[in-house]
Image (tube, rainbow, N blue to C red; front, side, top):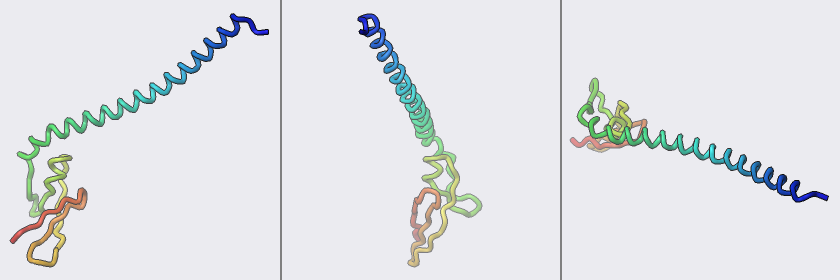
Length: 105
């Protein structure tokens, strides 16, 4: 026959084991939140600096038009390539982000 002392000691062990598992799950959640927080901080910093990038935007570099979206949103220089739309308006497109802009005559 199991005594009262053994019963509550067993219960204490079960509770401790359950809390240990819960602590592990919480650590994983915290690590995920840290990753998300770091990503959000990077996104905030990038978004906040976008306004200042407009003053450094070079629409054409070495006769090649540059994607405004890539520069403003990601601070990356990406060329726009002529897609030759077939009518009198040429279409330029960024291969990186898909941004399109017509070049009107």
